[in-house]
Length: 130
Image 1 (spheres, rainbow, N blue to C red):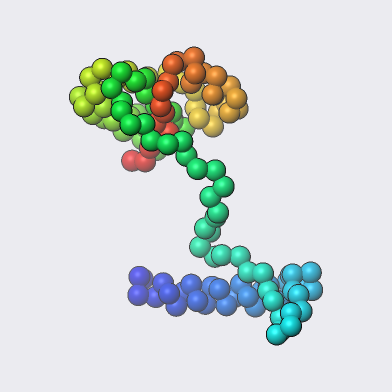
Image 2 (spheres, rainbow, N blue to C red):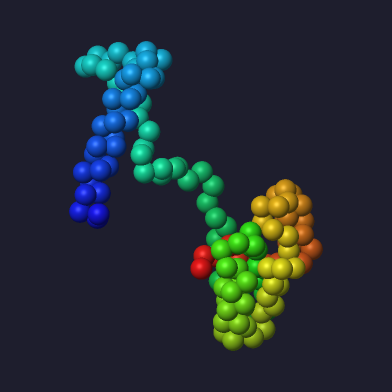
């Protein structure tokens, strides 16, 4: 199937362009000096990054690291392993287990931020994938 991916994407883009001419109508088409200008969405689903992550912590020793999960994607398996590895490498660091904080998507961001601050987190491990 990998052999046909570029051909599939080309065909998909062509369908999008044809569909745009039919369904978007004049509101999406502009007459330019050299012809028609069409607005076409990226079929890969790529998005522009508007907010970057916080800078990396230089050191984890003597820091409190909180685990934050959506309680899916095998977090009950992966976070204990991460916690053990962090404790081995940084014995003076404190790791707050994911089950001491609420589901990352189950509470509004202001409340979640308050809970993270109350736990004294210097850094947060957000999510994981099994």
